[in-house]
Image 1: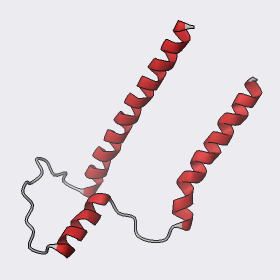
Image 2 (image 1 turned 180 degrees about the horizontal axis):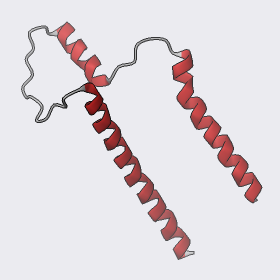
Image 3 (image 1 turned 180 degrees about the vertical axis):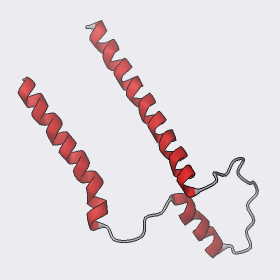
Image 4 (image 1 turned 120 degrees about the vertical axis):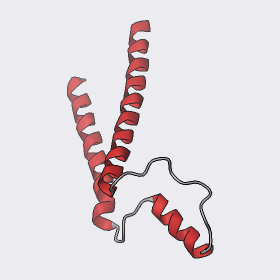
Length: 95
């Protein structure tokens, strides 16, 4: 039982790595964020469009923006992992 669980975990890890690597290897093109693509689409369809609001905070560089985005994703993943672990612990406690 324990050996098959370890094998299953390795297969899942290989599947996750494969899914992450597949687009990097086989998909050709430019990678960009959805915000930039939406801004380009709006500029193409409505060249005179002016945004209603300006951002409250603009990072000093794209690297800082990426850092903040990655931090936000890490915090979100931590919260999701905590909730999953909490429910799993609760189900083990109730057995």
